[in-house]
Length: 127
Image 1 (cartoon, rainbow, N blue to C red):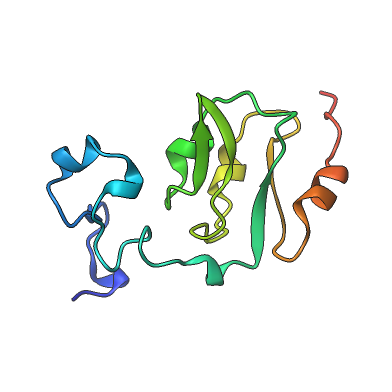
Image 2: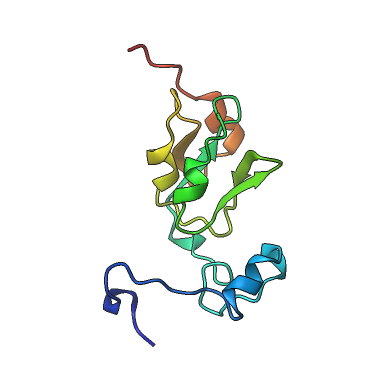
C-alpha cells in the first residue's frame, strides 16, 4: 500500500469495492466502499474548525457539493441541507468556493454550537 505522498499528482483513487458503473446506479448507502475510503473511515478527528451552513443565505449553487473532497455536503430535493460532520475534515474548501454575500458557509470553532454560530453571522458587505 502506498502512502498519500507517494501518488502522482492527479492520481485517481477508486473508493468502491465494486464496479463503479454499477455502483452509481445504487444509493450511496447501498454501495460497497473500500475499507480505506473516506466513506468508510472517518477523518473528522482532524478537524479544528467546522463549516456551518446558513440556509438563509444559500442559493443552492452546489459549488460546495462539487468541490468538497470528502462528499460531506448533504443535499436533498435539489437543496443543500447541511454538512456530514462524521466525514468532514474541516478543510474549508466549501467556504472558499461559496459565492454568496455573506457566504452561506463559514468556518467556526469545532466546539461551537451551530445555532450560536448562525446567530453571529455577518451582514451583507457593501461594495
